[in-house]
Amino acid sequence: MTTRPTRELETFPNPKRERDYHIVFDCPEFTCLCPLTGQPDFATIQIDYVPDTLCVELKSLKLYLWSYRNEGAFHEAVTNQICDDIIAAINPRSVTVNGKFWVRGGITTTVIATHAK
Image (cartoon, rainbow, N blue to C red; front, top):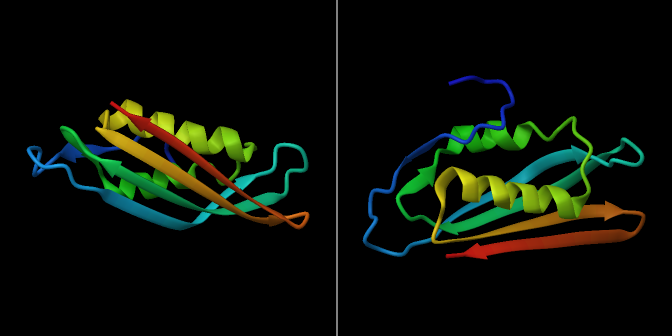
């Protein structure tokens, strides 16, 4: 596995497919760039999903999130893209991606994207 940023999410088989259970990732060091100013935007991304047949491998998630570091993205777009990419990689029973973006101009932004089968 690479140690460079990548948009590929690695997966592994769900070890307890017959049960609904949540996997929650808290990613407090997410960074992307403001598409208008080029300045960094910092956020905590929380991904909460109920796996079906596959789970997301943790190191690949780290490298995936790292891939946004030098990319311009609106908060709404990046949160929904992360949700879409999780769905495409593992087709979970449900997923919620919560992007809590830190203060910019006196305003914090929280974007919540959800999906359920």
